[in-house]
Image (cartoon, rainbow, N blue to C red; front, side, top):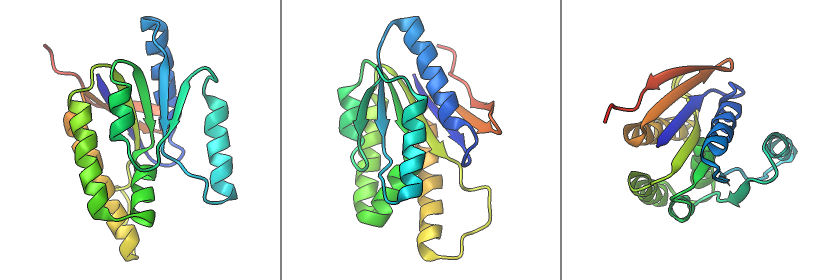
Length: 176
């Protein structure tokens, strides 16, 4: 099951995703593997990361993967995984690498998700509901974030939008 959880900044999307993972872990008796994409670039980001670390159980496995997600997804294929967050992952690529390399890795991630046999909860920001950004990098980010969210939503079994801590179902699993 692939479950994409979208929302704005401080919408409650990570908290919701972590609660889903905890519930799945209790039901299936499986471990949770948390794949973090954030990097510490300044004191404010250090505080955000510390907040996220404090909010999740210490026994969850952690992989920090700011650039290449396809390998950790494949390695955790039969587990419960949380990827938090796709838009930070995108920011890492746009600010430190190149968009062509990002596109290659995005295709690899989608490919690994298509063959994923566990439960994968993916967190991403919904940034397309605001105004068109003024700067070229900001517009590039908004464009790539929209395309990335569409690509993941296309392969996801379920998509949830979290607004003010309230989950809204956008896509349900198809009956088998």
